Length: 319
Image 1: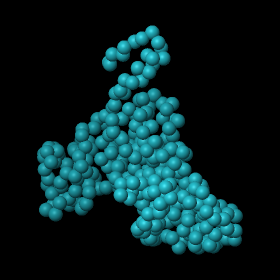
Image 2: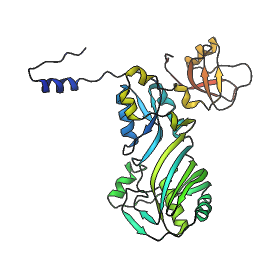
Image 3: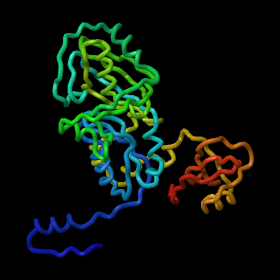
Image 4: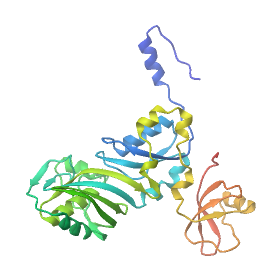
């Protein structure tokens, strides 16, 4: 226990106590957070990291401050597999306002144009369906993408427009959930790198009236669902033991990959960094590896010579 020099001033004592570095825990798992409105993804991450006193943490796909919903937070050894969640398809509920365009493509930006809206639900559905499939999308200036080490939004705030390259993204599905006058709510399933703000703008441009995003909520990431998520307020109200119990296993981040169980000898040599043989047919590509007691070992892959090689192993995790 660190020694705190006490004074007769209680306020000063409290300040000195706050200066003591918090003990960080080597805690592992995936927390499904319902990110609140107004928080950046990094602010949400830092709050969760602080609440768990986690030594290591990372989020799995940026949500704008005006967006809410599912944000998986990887703690400890789970951070080794965060990229699989970042790269996964995601589903959003997006609310679009027709007839108004803004500088940012959402409700935060300055209004650029206002046009009358004479669009039926049938017309809106027909146009929205034109964006299903692999499409080319130009990233917005108000985004965290980097140019020469500086975020695009920083250039945009200085009035500088940077030439961007359009990127191929995939809209897997679009369902029009509600449509009333100049407001449409759609459910979009898409690949990583998709900007729903840009999709809203593109739909509005195709309709000839313009549009911007006024609401966004992420509901699915990989196999994780929003009803499984917890809010920051709920986390704050829980004691440490109940908070920890909310963490999903580290290997849940890669549950879509084939599972392979290794015998005692193979486990021994794999943990030494060596490729190992496995009797029978082994699936190609990345593999979830376990020992005979079903303890998760990490990620491996099948080599051309038929051996399983370690790719990203975890430190021993207490189950």
